[in-house]
Length: 295
Image 1 (cartoon, rainbow, N blue to C red):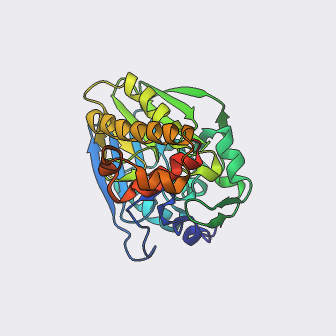
Image 2: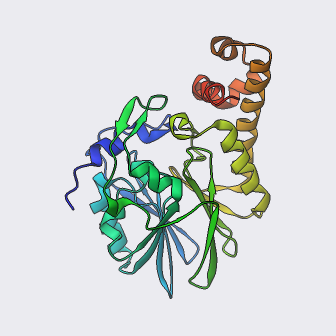
């Protein structure tokens, strides 16, 4: 399939990643590798595309996300450099096109898994106003998940149980992937340890949903868990806990302010330092996200 969608897929200024711009999609194409134990490698591109997680074992290879289609050739080269020639499953973390652009290259031999809402989003044009003021065209069938679920699905692969849970948080099509035995989790764009993730209000996301989903994830993660975000380096449980506390404080403040009749301008102007200081330059955007999501 001709790669004609890449620029539109990445030009969404990272689709929710605050303070990390997409930039020129042709300027930086390096893909960095980080090993997590023996079975996991995180591939991270130097642009607005999302991370790819590579989980390898005797049964083959399982991927989480496939970057943007503008750099799918680079992703395939990185996989080849790892000696990967047996991708059997791909789990997509949400519908944003900078996370699933390589699906069509790999789906002829790999099973793509995603929430039913993700498949539905890819089948029709998606217009985003809050994040990027841009319309993303529907993608053809090779990009769609061929296996869908409503709430959760589990795979037994490479001698591990892989749990994939549908949450409504960054979008209404999010999936969190957990390997309980390896103590590894993938969150997609629900969080990053290097900035703040703004939810996609236009396709069912909310800051309150992010707080709820990440709080539930925290409850099941051990202290030494490794949490791989959709963008940026892997983080620790302690880092995730701090992120959740700030997001929850933002949601709580906005809810109380809305109940008191405050409008958006007042909410932003009157936000106390204990809410705004941790968010830094992202504070107005995160407060607006909470407000537009109903608190």
